[in-house]
Image (tube, rainbow, N blue to C red; front, side, top):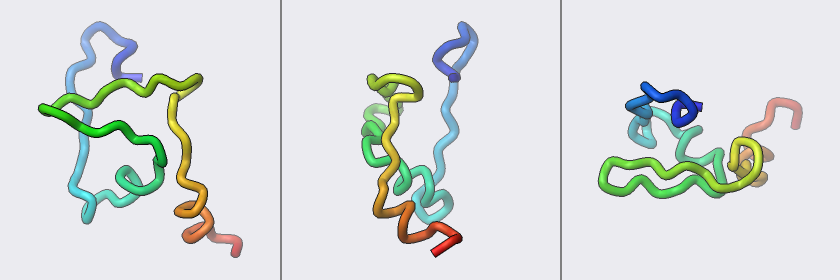
Length: 61
């Protein structure tokens, strides 16, 4: 969503210990390179959830 607005500038990203969901929940998360986070290329949000990670931590198991 940030990339869709002309004045969008910074994506906030934390260390994996601080924000494990960002680093583990998305199966096809693009690599951050030279401080740049590439836009996902798939339809919709362009992300795929890691089904194993979701299954491991879902509340209704």
